[in-house]
Image (tube, rainbow, N blue to C red; front, top):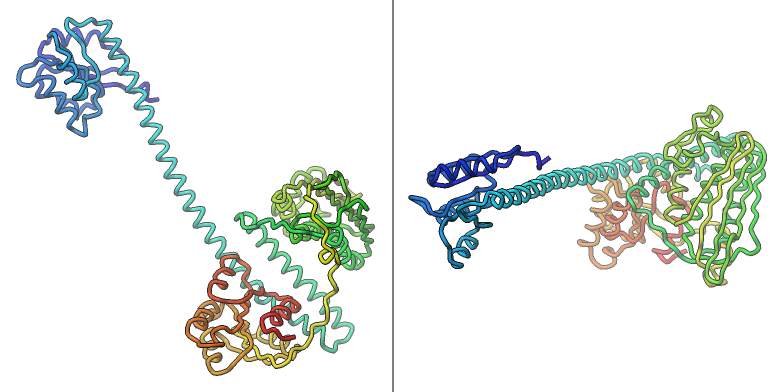
Length: 534
């Protein structure tokens, strides 16, 4: 520690007797005394011996104590030395002030009272020790700050690397997935026999399962990066729970399970919440129950726990008769990538991300979730949260109509900028089934040149292409072409789902964004909206 470090003290007096007396009085552990009777040696001693305190006689030959004080305080290497001036003469107030003004910290008057002398020196020693501790702490803080800056810098670099990796992996995985799902969609609408229908069903299920895994990984990463926001709006909670129950019932029936839904009659229709995240939480929990239940039933319930004029506490429970969770694993069931070390569980597979995402989303919503389970008898996940009540709007309260048959378009010609041959095939066939004429460009520059020569109603522009990517081509169109051509509607058509890539596409001038694999209904709606033709 700083308090144990040696403190160097310099005694300067032309009387060797005075020096001997002072040295004897001040001598103790952790103090090293330097003495000199020649003022000309003082600066060398101060600079070479790390002097902290100096006791200097004012009246000396060759150089006075005041002059020596000036030299010490004018040098940046010695100006921190604390100087006590010693004098045997009666001094005027003016002379005392003169010394203090030059930088002396105190005076000692001869003949010296050694008790007073040692007391004053000891007080200065304490100050020196505190100063050293402060300097040491400052150095530690500077080191810590540098390490912190370095850690933050490395974390930012790792974050960028991670995001770029996820963007690339997303694109590489979603591109072939788009082809698989698209071809499956086309096959469903073509004449096929019963065996082929079964194979298509399996292909559809497998591809969507893979897409779910990709989405879970990206979703978990987005939560880590703090990019998931809870967007609260009016939600018809009764319709939401009932609709999700209806959507997941066929999945349960395929496994021979009975799925039931019970909604408390006291449940208010309209609350303030994030419909997207509530939907995601509930579907994850139901899918998890279906996955780990081989026989029996799955019960979904929505209950009112508390209710007032302005808010309500709701409890949503998903209870199954599945295989159950081992007691030793209950505390880890929501950990990321956690897979229960039980042969019965391991045969079901999975990434171990679904329940982790559920818990983290619920925490972002200021809700809570608990799990109760018994091996061989089943598991119950219970999600509880307080919601603000919302005014009922009849237009919002009505359940949505089922998706209508996708209508044909008239007199629509689209330019598809896509370098992947399989994705070209899928997109062309889907667009043609809607009576849309399609031209193809294999890179952004080719799309730009084709647009110069021909009028199109809309461009489907892939982001990642050789020669010129979709964003560069969009900027070129917006800046260099004239009249209606520079304002042509452009849908960014990409396998990337990273936020900053979407922002780059928007900044480049695209009108809308659709992800691969794409939902035909969504693409149909976007084309209809941007071309104003159905």
